[in-house]
Length: 342
Image (cartoon, rainbow, N blue to C red; front, side):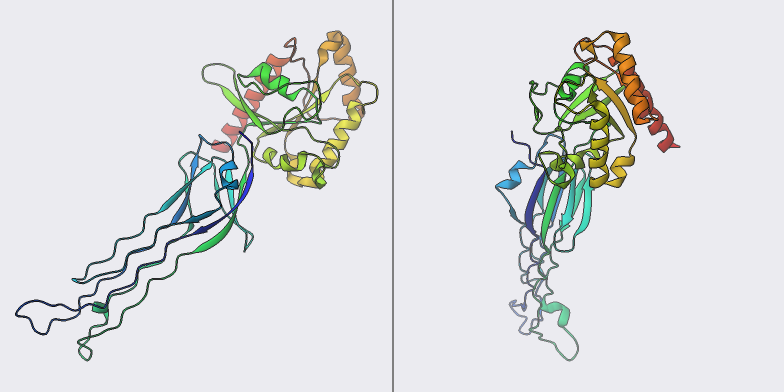
């Protein structure tokens, strides 16, 4: 299935039904009074978060949604039937914006969560409401109110505890494959990952976390180059970023120090808060050299960068350093949850 993380749709709530101008007509009651009922309320348009969905691709084909209108009132003060609400299923993690006002209407982050994006119009009043001592046979009634209409932008941001950040071909997909049951496509060329994929890392029966494999970036991603600009936003929800960089510097490629600084620049240009998010440095593909040599080489890069945060040396092929890294991630996330709980 194609991954689509943005869609524009139009939603229209149902109009309210008109009130009724009706009079009682009963045998032996020659002067029956007004008995027109009110119109029914129009149906609302409601977005519903569904964890079974992971893309907005359906909205590339269906873009116009209309809720049912309310029925008109009738005699004997009978209120018209209200229009049925229209429920639209969207993936968990969908943010909703009003395109005309450029305001955020809501953020659907839990399965089953609902958001009313267009309210149905109220039903009109029947003529029974206009009866008075001076107007015993009113013929007035009011039409139903129109339902709200909106142009919406749906923006999907994946929900994950940990986001993987790197230039292409740094070993993110291999890492997710090694530590979880996810099976992202893996190859030896850039842009292997064409859309975000999620993997669940289970430490033990009670401890687990979700990792998001984001497509690799290239320089200029924050300005729209390559695939990166489409997916940088998915990192905004994560609690921790793993900045992954190849430890060996092959001929013709930028050395790890240059890669780290270039990617930091992309983060800063895209979102200042994203740059300041907790980020750990992870050197990958350490199996191409001896363990002591790999760690010494990584330490050189760390010192040259002036890196102050945690850093790791791993190999997803030989599993070197994976237990230490995943254990530290689990401890960090648990500490974060405890801090917010307090």
